[in-house]
Image (cartoon, rainbow, N blue to C red; front, side, top):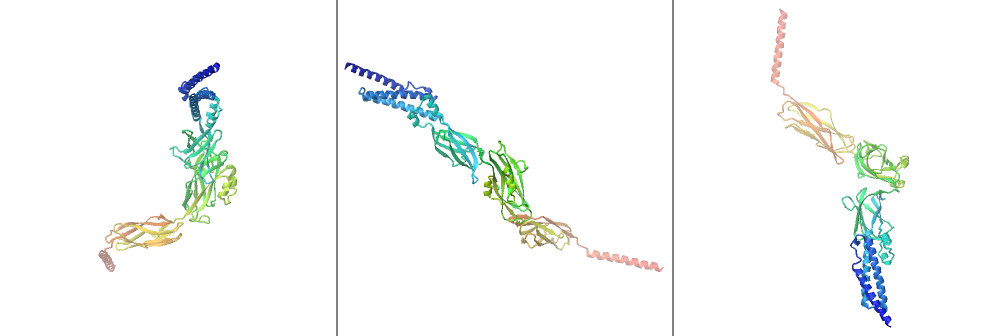
Length: 501
């Protein structure tokens, strides 16, 4: 019996000593200030302390089960073990969150079937905390797996412009779990047409990354997206409308494309020009450094309406950007009535444009003469012929006269309600000089205005010259006549007398 008592006492002393050692270890001796900087090594230190505390707790529990120690000593060992376990888990979390890394694998810009600009963004979990921790600390226990080091939770993603304004729709997307080796793709509509965007990623315990990236093109697509802000215009007959074209390459195979217009009548001329040099174009070539280009399309209407060009009737046509290997398909079917569905099946870039021909009247003022000589007490009557040589009706045709001081006018009629295309109207002007007008030449400017299709029309100015003749002296004229007659009579009498002698 004595040896049993002695053995029990020895075990109590050993257990008490080990408890003190474990307690001291759990407090500070194994702590190193550089553990916060070298967290993987700190994790290794915390794991060793955890294993010692766990072994001691299991030993103390065995002694307690054999009723060799008190419950107070078992509780002390349990508390030390719990503290070591918490420190170990905290070190695990510090390593896991420090090594979490979310990367943008790809960002592809494309256009959907509705013509909206979209970005397909792929994110990957490249966290290395799991592999490094397992390698350095040889972790394979349930605690490590329960913390899910290979999963990044609550990843928030948005796209920003240079002013850091969100340009993505939705404004912010969330990935609940991003697992290691399992990339996830988010599809955004971008509200601003940019070739480079800033990707904002917030994840884990609040880690934030912002990356400015250049958007890729979809290599599976072989087309050029074409857009025009001035997709619908009105233009007068005989005039030219210019459509701006924004061309953006979405191709990983071809870089040379032809420009074609389909759906226009032959009498309507068309011409492509480069957006910067204004050189004429039939094809465009893209490079790696320049995947966007600007061009313009000039459409000139004929001077007169025709069966295919009618006033106020919309003409719809397509601008097509075609890979060179498909140009023959377009040019060989020039008479075909293409639809948007046909072009989509052909898998080419296109945009629909609308052109509305508008007519406009043109006022021509004709006169048989523009010079009149009258006496001071007479009036000058000037007939003018107003002719519409435009392509639409003239309305509210009126004449204005710039008269010399104190002169008066009369216009009959004051306003011509309308003049049809190719028709004319006669307006009479009566110009009256003042009673005390001095002899000489006076100019009267005639201006003409009208309205056509809601737009003002200005006719060519005419100048009417009115000459006021001087008044003749009747008494002086009679005296002069009498003197001349007297002289003639005297000469006759004198001649008769000479002949008699």
